[in-house]
Image (cartoon, rainbow, N blue to C red; front, side, top):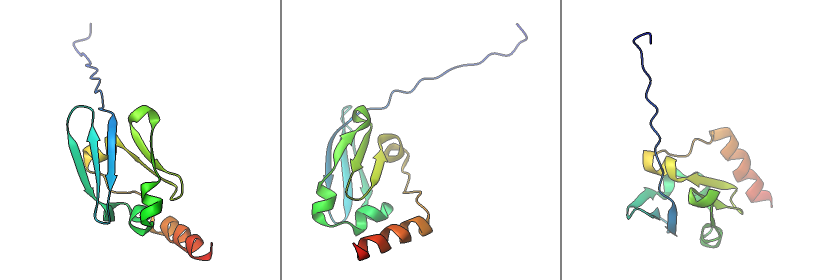
Length: 103
């Protein structure tokens, strides 16, 4: 050996078991007992969606994500655990918002 070693760490993410969404927050219960809450404003498409659109979601990716088909929004458990906000560009969001207004 050359004196260097490498370590591989595998992190198992918990699956999503329940999702609750309101005008103010996204609340996700995980299989390991944790509950994560994030402000709805972190996800502009959810914030601009109607209550009906926000309630139309499915837990996807074998339990590691949430998908809103009418809003074309996907949020993963990893991002929630890391406290990541939406990374959608302002330009992309504006195009999406404009299409909603003309539809």
